[in-house]
Image 1 (spheres, rainbow, N blue to C red):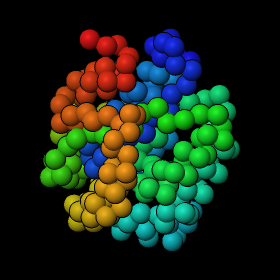
Image 2: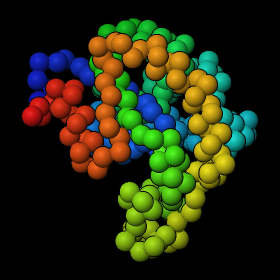
Image 3: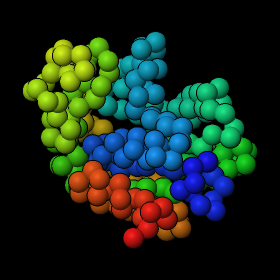
Length: 224
């Protein structure tokens, strides 16, 4: 484990907020800094959609994979791909109270616990604007954002020099359906855990490096 963790034996992190809050960017930064296994629910769902037509229909429409089905798929994947000694950062999972309790029980069975839930605060319309500005390279899979992380040349991948494209689930009408799903299913989870000691809120509208610094400060790493 990285020395930055001081006296803590293990860390498990979970990010959630509106899609487009920057949680993916921050998750990758933190996972790299702290040597954590990065599990990203959106990418996981899209991979499943490539070989499962029913899941593809769900993902493309902006809906969530049914709660219990997603939980089984996630745990099966983690059991096969994450060594017991490796610590995990969850991005976008769980999204229901039942999933959260299932995750806590699953982690307890591995001798671990949830150390932090990081809640990034971003205005809904700002999130929609960010998401609809996301573009992906069809060749290398690099993800750009025309607002927060644009390519050097407009809509052209810096690495492959090919035109970027917009995913179906990043189109505005789909994003707005995803927000309705979020409000219906995820906000009850926020209310369920907001008074827990491991729940922290961070301003997700600041610059990327400032958001990272605030997260690290609040979880007790690199304090001011």
